[in-house]
Image 1 (cartoon, rainbow, N blue to C red):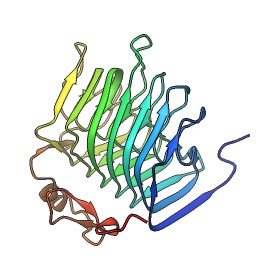
Image 2 (cartoon, helix red, strand yellow):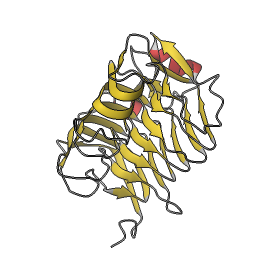
Image 3 (spheres, helix red, strand yellow):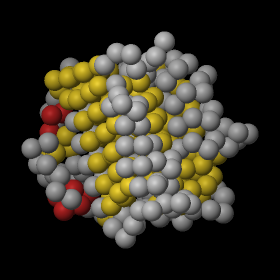
Image 4 (tube, rainbow, N blue to C red):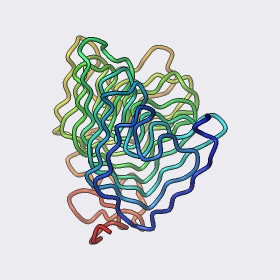
Length: 275
């Protein structure tokens, strides 16, 4: 059956889902695939275990959108871990985005892959592993660790873009403390390889430990630009020691974000009782 047969609209109205766990063989995540919208919801102590799957995974969706069936995730908070073994794309919110948008989201995640024999070519990232056609990630904050010692394409926000069109990665803050991988590793994205796209005004943690285990990638904001890319990288991003100041400079909406503390917080979940 087509996993995109049904359109879904979930408004969490500020509620929290505790201890969500998925090890499903196809697209381990809350939705599996998301054709529709997810907003105003928080996940605490979520765990995605992709040990027995060859599908992409993430806390919200393995896939967000597909051609002609868009997906949207916004004003959503995820905290937890995503673990994978096989050659898949994995992210804190989504494994892959294809005709979809992730906007104004907060991810406190550990995303980890282990497969020393297969050297997985897909990406892993704090928000998304793989950005495809018409994929947008903007105004998101990521903290945690991206651990892909045997993985290609590891990034604090996005693992990679995959030769797509209209790919947008902008106004994000990667506050992860550690990013590692085998090839193409970056504090914001591992590999940026698009036919057309925009990658601009992203910030990363000036103290992040970015490690490449093979002789490729720069270990900077973009790990590897990729052949055939047409994007101008001049304004891709820079490091910062003050994420709230960076968010203010990026023009983040203060009706959504609280920028008065050490790190940006989604106002909907401040002082929430977690219900």
